[in-house]
Length: 129
Image 1 (cartoon, helix red, strand yellow):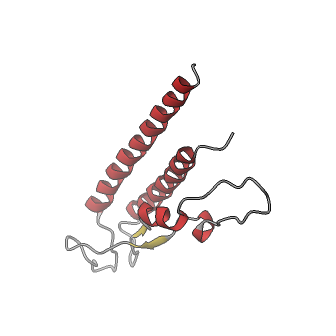
Image 2 (cartoon, rainbow, N blue to C red):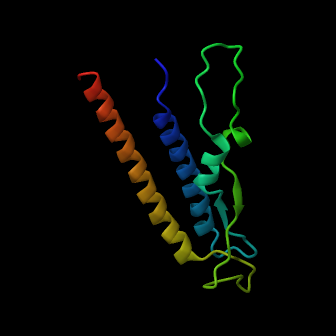
Image 3 (cartoon, helix red, strand yellow):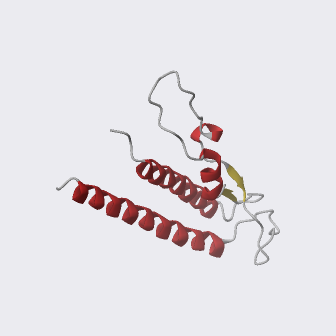
């Protein structure tokens, strides 16, 4: 049986969300560190664009499409906001923006989990369980 691509995509997004939460937590932890630059991950849309749709390989001689970046989540400097800009200490972390990101990450993770749960239920219904 061929793997279901939705599960692979949901797994990749969960990994991306986990990395993003770790980066945001690091930003919050370093909110008072002099010259610390806030970071964020490349948006998941860019991850989707880099992967594209893959055809199933039914023979080992078929060409394989590699995931751009080796499947790693890329980091970038976070955009500066008008709210905080660069502080006197050189720090660029905006606590309110980082806290908003944590809420956004939580909502995306819950949506991801609900979609996987629903798809799993549909598959069980299809096989008569």
